[in-house]
Amino acid sequence: QVQLQESGPGLVKPSETLSLTCAVSGYSISSGYYWGWIRQSPGKGLEWIGSMYYSGSTYYDPSLKSRVTISVDTSKNQFSLKLSSVTAADTAVYYCGRGGGDYTPFDYWGQGTLVTVSS
Amino acid sequence: AIRMTQSPSSFSASTGDRVTITCRASQGISSYLAWYQQKPGKAPKLLIYAASTLQSGVPPRFSGSGSGTDFTLTISCLQSEDFATYYCQQYYSYPLTFGGGTKVEI
Image 1 (spheres, rainbow over the protein chains, first blue to last red):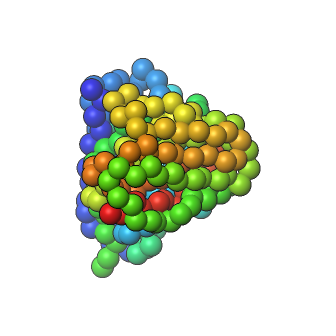
Image 2: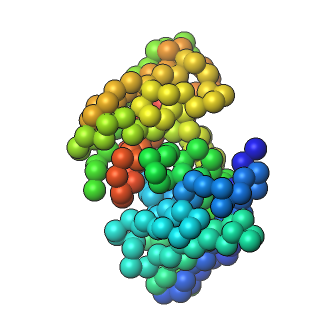
Image 3: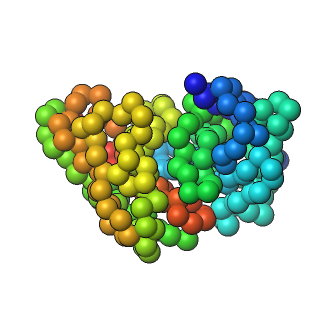
């Protein structure tokens, strides 16, 4: 059973960098699939942030591309999100998921973690 | 970016109803269309992919159809556990995009 679990600070100050990690169990990231991040602002819809393949290919949403980095640590079977220069508009529930590349939907999701941007 | 438009944005229904939600893509996406169900406070759950293929474990009362730009999600006999918000998503090209959601209320 594939499971994903997000972790990271729930509160980030404006202009700082949001950092989250997604730990994967039940499947080896290096076995394949793309791995991605999706967010949902309070009361709003879903927004794709970016996806990456374990070997390093990455794709980002153009509106966030200048501030986003997704990376993978195959030794720990986890991948990470960094979003710089955050503002209140980045307050959201952040989900990690398997999929989002090579014509694959997101078939497994983490439970989500709320990140609030506030001083 | 491909824009995904869902309709309606919300509606009321009753247990046992047959309901249909539509999703339109701003350009052709072949059959690279997924449907998700989300309940309050929970992560989205994949229901259907490739426009019409039921994800493992999803009840057969859910079905999807369409290709190109127009797609539908149908729930043949609404159950109490189906009251939720439904999203479509295209995975044909980057950036990946979701529809705005359809909330199915009692």
